[in-house]
Each structure stands twice: as C-alpha cells, then as structure tokens.
Amino acid sequence: MLVSPRAALALVLSFSVAGCRCGDEGPRTKAFGEPRFVIEVDGVNVEATEVDFGIVPMTKRVEKVVTLTNIGRGPLQFDGFTKVGEGAAVQIGTTAVEPNPVFGLDLEPFELAIGESRELKFFFFPPEAPQAVVDHEVMLAASARNVDAEVAPVQIKLKGRAIRGECEWPTRIDFGAVGRGDSFEVATLLKNRRMVDSFPRVGDIQSAQGADVFTLTSDSPRGELTLAPGRERAVKVVFRPTEVRDYTATMVVLPADGCPEVTTRLVGTGVDNVLSWQPAPLDFGYVQPGVTVNGEVTFLNRSFKPVQLSGLATREGSNPSNIYRVVAANMGDATRLTVPAGSRDATTNDIVPGSAKVTVSFRPAVLGPRNGTLVATADLSNPGVTVALRGFGGGPDIDVLPAQTLNFGRIAYFAGTTSAATRKLTVRNVGTAPAVADPRANLRLGAMGAGRPYWTVTPKNAESAADEICVGVFDAMAGTCSNDLP
Image (cartoon, rainbow, N blue to C red; front, side, top):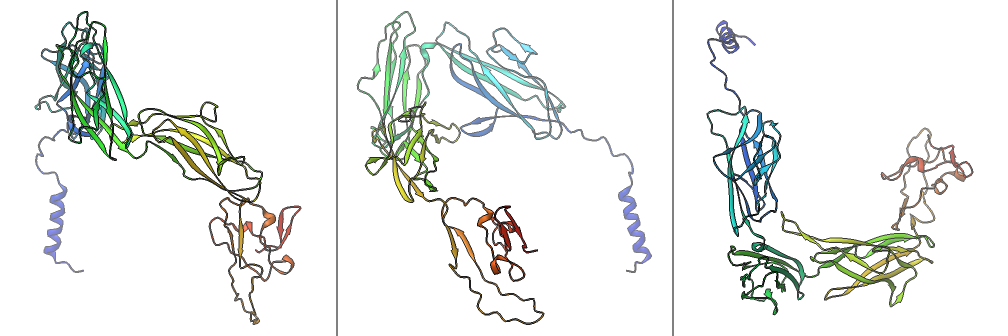
C-alpha cells in the first residue's frame, strides 16, 4: 500500500500523542470499600437498616442472620460495630462487652474483597423483668477501614419485644398436610404462671376460605376465661381440608390480662393422601431360580405426625407368599414400620415428607412370572396399604436374529478383489438383568470356528468390546482365543 508523506506523518504524531504522559495527570482516585447489610424477609433479600426480632419470651435467646456485602470498588476492612447513643446493653465480639448484653454478635475483624459477602449472626437475649412487656432497642454504626471518610457510617437498628412467660403464645400454628375428608388437631396450652388469677381471652377463627376448615373443638375455651394460679387450659383447633390446596386463617389470643394480643396465623395443606410409596410396583426383573434378590420400598409421610404401619406381610393372591418375604422394617420387627412425620420448608413452603424403608426379598423357585403384593395396615382414616410386587424366574433372556442361519447367499469371487459382503447379526438381551460376561459363550465364526481369512466382526454398541468376540479357535480349558482376527 502507498502512503503519502503527509499521511505517514499524521500517523506517527497520533501514536506519539497517545503514548506520552504530558503535563500533570492530577491525583488518582482511591478505591474504597462500601458495606451494605441485607436481611431475608419472606424469602426475599432486602437492604437492612433495622433488624426486628419480634416478640420473644424473657430469658430466651433468639438469633437472626444479616448478610454483609462489600458493594464498593475496593477491599473492605470490617472491624465491627460501635454503639450509637443510649440503648440496650450490647456485646460486639470481644471488643465491646457491656454487662448483661441484650443484643450482640460474635465477631472478629475480617476483610471483604470487592463483591464478597459474609453472614453475621445477631442475638436478642432479653432479661427477666417485673413488667409483662418490655421493648428493647439499640442503634449500631458499622466500623470499617478503607471507606470514604466523607460518607457517614452505615447504621443498623436492633429491636425486639420481650414478654413474661405467661404472655408467650405462638404467632403461627402449622397443621402440615392432611388428607381430604380427614382431620388433624393441634392443642396449645394457656398457662397461668402467676400467684393470682389470670384472665386470658380466645378470639374467633377468621378465614376467607370457609368457616368449617379451621374450627375450635367443643371442649376448647372461647372468649374470656379465668385461670387459677398454676392452672392451664388447652386451646384445641381442628383442620379439615375439603380440597387439595393450601389453607390459612387467623385467630387473636390474649394469653393473660396485661399481655399484648397475639394474632396467630393458622396454616395447613389439603392433599389426596398423606402416605405414599415408591417404587410402585417394586419390580425385581429376571432372577435365576434359587437366587435371592432384595428390593426396597420407601414410604413417604407428608403429615405432621408419625404414621404406624402394622401387619406387614407379602401375599400372592389371598395367600401368604414364600417367594416374596419381608426381610427388614423397623427395629428388627419385620411386621411393623414407623414412618416419621414430615415438615414444612420455611423457604419454599413445601411439605418435606418423612421417610422409612421396607426391604423385601424375591427368591423364585421355578421359571416364569410371579406377581405378589406387600400389604399393611396404617393408623389413618384410609388404612389399607397395598404395594404391587413383580418378578420373573429365569434371569437374562438372550435372543439372536436371524435365528438358526445367517445366510450370505452366493458371493461372486474375482481375483485380487478386497470387497466383502456384509450381513447383520443381532444378539440382544430381552430380559431385565444383565448377562454375566463369559468368554466361553462368545461368537465363533468360520469353517469349524477357524475364523480367518473369511470373516470380520465389528461391535455396534458401546457395551460390546472386540475382545468379547472370538472369531477363531477358542480354547475352553485355557480361556483363550487363537487364530483370531488381526
């Protein structure tokens, strides 16, 4: 390419200007770290300026996790917190420990790189007090190095309400999964820990999903009642779902006079069946007669109470089975099984079922299919449990196509030709158990098994290897193949 002198000079000057450091660039901007606090609220992470521990009984310690993230453009040296103004006593690691701390966290200084996070676990530990209700709060300021001095320190408020023991009442009662048409009862105690009478109050249940789903039992207290010193009463609520869905309701309870009212949220899930099992059926596949194979049935319980199975046994038709047997269940008792209660995942709100296993053996005596059942009785409104069992006496079933004769027909011969005629021989296992590798059962081709020079064999799937196929003379005593293909 031809370039004029003017153009060449312009190019050189351009590089020279870009490459030099002309004049004073001025001071460089320092990259600072910047702390941000995040807390999870109803499954969503939100920026935290306040941590509310809610209502906590006196002398009970509870914790909440706050995530600290460095959102700055430089590393963050985090030293801890300092107390701002007056407020409840605090403990910040070992650097700031006030007597009888109400709020605090265990903490050692650390460094956060750009974008890194660390969880901080704050505690609320309200002391005993003569008042029925005491509110606590304190303001803390983050203490960090390598932060912009012109930006005010990030602050976070910790607060919580402490109540005396007689004021304790749950804010949520979860009934778990209950089958349609079935019911589940939860009893919660009102206790009078005072030396004088207390006057609690139980409000009506409110729900937009029907008045008969959550109900107080006939012997449960309603309205205001009197509790003598040291006495208690059970507030009993029954959940009766009519559809497969989630249900909610609310109930306002005053645990004792002088206490704050507590709005209790009632939650439950309607399902078709609380008990299920897998696999269904339990298929043992092909098993050689006289050989024993074990299989497992896993029972899943979605309710919030354990399910008891009794009378575990195997049947063929209506008769006891000697081919199928229960080998193991609960604690060495092969006739009983306890399936643990389920729970609810706090993040997803899904029911996590409890599980337990039963081991069943299959030992066929003759060839052919054998169908059976595993039966039991559950302590549920629908007590019958029937698990199908299936097995086949006989093991692997090898099929060869074409059968009997692999016919190549007439093949033209020309001197010096290297062409070959190809035919497909399919060897397949139509059973459900793998065939045991045995070189004595390998394919042998050629005149009297002589192999070369007439035959070549190529495996057509990844499960077959060339050394599994003997095209030559197989020595059954030595287990070797000679005069094989090169």
